[in-house]
Length: 332
Image (cartoon, rainbow, N blue to C red; front, side, top):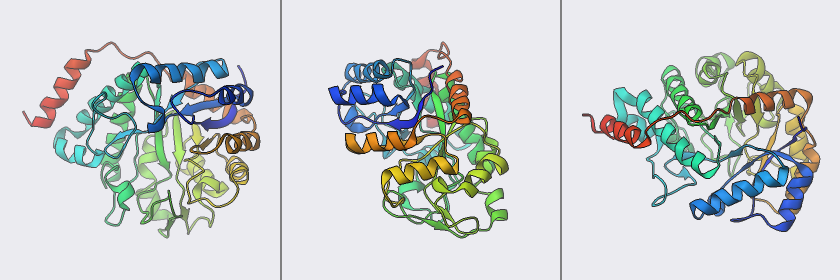
């Protein structure tokens, strides 16, 4: 199999430019990610996904953030508008796990119809009393066992629909009181506390094909942000037991300081398999791709395992699933 570039990259607009096509052909990123600026109409998204795969000459994974609430790139009226996950879980009550499965099975159907075969979910960070508002209503709850159960339902719903889940933000982002898009959060909880709380849902879901790091500092473990920390990567790999593909969260977020190529090299050296880099110029993307290079042997093996987890969607009646979900949420 072709050795993949250790990056996941985006596009500037609704279609690939000539320069982007040439760059992707040369750098061969493992996969791609879409944002709202890349989405206008169903047929346009299908063409863009086809262009991305044609550029690298293979069925590269294409991911997106389709959680619901603020974080959904596909919006109404063309696609389903979803309430924030925490609000949805609370509305579903005792039926939350079944409702989350149906929700993400329906999301998978809309994604796969466009050629998108990965989703950056489940997000199993724990909601706490001081969790920053950028994250709080994206969470599924505050109890590790409940969140793990709901995260499993999300992953199963996506996989049943032919879409690869990406569990995030490893090893746990819920204690942050800052938005890592703008600042670097710090957490001072002891490892024993973290192991029974924040880390626990990730350990329960360690078989999910792909995971995404968190940009925050666990002060009792390391002064480096988790994405750049060999010590935190060791926690993820050994203590949590996650031996599948690890991608960084977007390294252009302001929580990480320094030149993008330096951040890239640090993330790979720490143990990340692939670097996610978004919202940048073509020259910056090229510099990051060059710094990332090709995947290591171990990363390539994990990438191939992730791709092997892509299965055809199960044969279901989507309208019937939607009706079933409406019945659950109505309390009937």
